[in-house]
Image (tube, rainbow, N blue to C red):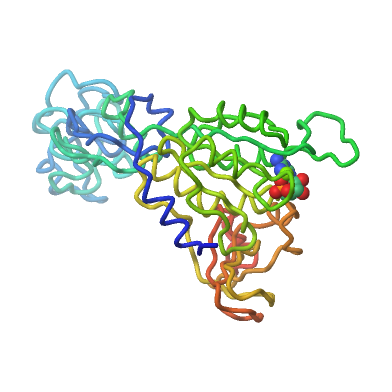
Amino acid sequence: MIKVEEALKTILEGIRPLGCENVPITSALGCVLGEDIVSGRTIPSLANSAMDGYAVIAADTASASRARPVVLDVLEDVPAGKVATQPVRKGQAIRIMTGAPLPGGADAVMRVEDTEAQGGRVKIFVAAEPGLDIREAGEDVKTGELVIPRGSVIRAAEVGMLAALGRSFVYVHQRPVVAIVSTGDELLEVDEAPGPGKIVNSNGYSLAALVLEAGGVPLQVGIARDNREDLLAKFKAAARADIVISSGGVSVGDYDLVKDIMAEIGSGIRFWRVAMRPGRPLAFGLLEGKPLYGLPGNPVSSMVSFEQFIRPAILKMRGYGNLFRRVVRAEMADGYEKNAGLKYFLRARIELREGRYVAALTGEQGSGILKSMVLANGLVVLPEDITAIRPGDEVTVQLLDGSLDLTAEPGALVNR
Ligand code: AMP
Ligand code: MG
């Protein structure tokens, strides 16, 4: 039996980022850039107006006030997307909309609130400094500028910037294909009628969802029955994936054949059993250098093992630098007793109360109780050496998603 940290180190040291491919920017969200994005454009391409108003010569407005407005002749209207047909000269103005290019001769934009239209003329009530309400050419991006460096994770802002630069495709690290084999004679397909002693293959679905959430591509190989032939066939079908995971059949029962099959098709088991709960009977090996996981069958065990050992592997293949969930310190709302020697991952609901995180357990912590995962938004991590925690103790929590409960936070409802 090895420790969680050691298991993770063993797994990650063998993993390299996958190669890169060109994908549409609309599919690149969450991917890691495999190229430097250097701008071939200047944005904005021309100086333009930051306001709806009038393009003017600042010097013309120097004496303007509410009591003694300056009056200018209005030459034309320039909406966004159009260009003025003539320059602004002394005593003149051009009506201009936000984003429209600044006409020649003008060096300021007088916002419409500080003016009053009067036939073909406009009254200006305040004096403008040169440059007022003008966006300079290139104030966002300059030609030749490194805008997004290789290795960046593509978020909505990067997608928008790529579009602005005229890039409809972008070169990113590939998503690993993750094959999922569910083992067990008791397993039913999701739409089969329940029968005595039978259960639905829910792991196949929760694991596929976890793969998707980590940005991998799930490949459901299906249910393998607890016999050599079927297990071998399903594992072989899974072997072309970048990562192979199975659930069930890795304990010490008579029908727990997965370790033998893993050893047979791969290059040996690197470890079996990790000092953790849930998830102790995890087996890990290699298949043509690719990670091969035998996850425990209990629904919570397989999900928690995925969180600790597979999600980081997927992210590493995707080229991520940070492989882990956000971790915070929280105050326990409940007490809990545990065995020494095992690291525990307790399902909990994390709330923000008066600026502090509070973790409340989501009920029974048995590894078959999937509802405790449904209710949880975090995992409380209790180290190997301790045997109990009390209410009020500070603990480390892995946040499973962004759904922090803010309802107890004063002021959290103000903006709803
Ligand atoms: P095993 O390790 O194969 O003995 O499985 C441990 C427990 O997990 C048993 O109660 C199984 O019925 C359950 N289990 C195994 N595979 C799945 C699955 N794919 N979906 C839901 N539960 C499962
Ligand atoms: Mg089984």
